[in-house]
Image (cartoon, rainbow, N blue to C red; front, side, top):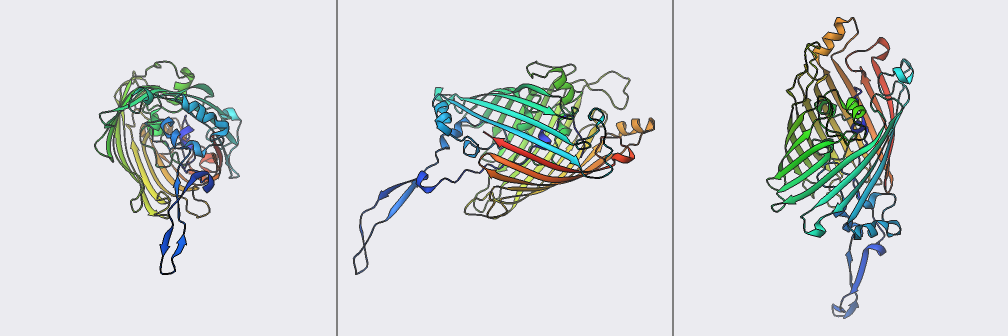
Length: 461
């Protein structure tokens, strides 16, 4: 698996939004029905019915809107509504969610070519630790008659022992305004957005082994690098939609350069960054009894930023970069049709591409097979197997060969992970990732292979 400058989306583990089952006494109210005669014996029976309610349902209006990322509901957090704090805030229109994501990677092969941290070439070459911490606060504007209206403010802090995917930062994650109009046919979201959570994606959040860096290199904003944008989604019906964005591109030199120049995320733009236009057409159907979970999408991006030309590095920067992608995920089998129809086995693929003269990644292919709640005793655990192949720019490869370096045309990785839901709001993941050529474009005889042990925790509050 290649080592992109922004690994945060890559290492996110799958998150399953599973409501907590409370005791019946907390969920049920009872009423007594009239006495009923049964048969010739005139037996008397007293029948009770239960009206169930979800004490957390009122918080749904405060979850961030417009994103594909399936962040757990307040029921699946450590603090839930402890001491009524969440309810008190909800009474004045405020909601919140926070989480901490901690990851560790370490190559298990004996010839890992360990180095100093400063000279590390890929994640896991030395034992590598990273943490990313988020707080998102929302304010409900529907209380003022604005249909689905919402203000979103978020902050992000990240730290890496290996700085290349970073750098370390504390800054803005999002600052957005959202509303719907014309009977919810249109959804508008504008502000400082991270479009990595608005376009493409997967059904159950980020799955270990998945990689969107082919889109980041062409300008799409990320969790650590939000940029000004206006997104508009039109729903043709309950399933078919088209979503467009006019976004300030991140730096054409990549997320690392973007964060270095704009660590707070508050600057309007960075050097050589222009306007990125994104358009995604998709079809989405949620799981229901006998109806499999399905998400099909295809998108393009056109970027006016000024990029270095890999075919002729001496010439001036040029605009006209672009990207395209096709992705599909579908539930192949429902293991609990009547109970929780989203449980079962899923399959999916992604194909992404960008011009090789302006991007180091020219093609990205991914196949994924994953299962939610495969075991009756572990109904919200997630198992994932992801295989991907990254094709590097032929111009970058030719330039490395011309310098006498060892170079490769692609990188292949196979990653398997098990994510366990240990308690409300607490997830832990364990996995292995085999990577052929873990460094982009160039390698040494000692760095052609890696077998990374992956360990991560994800805690929501």
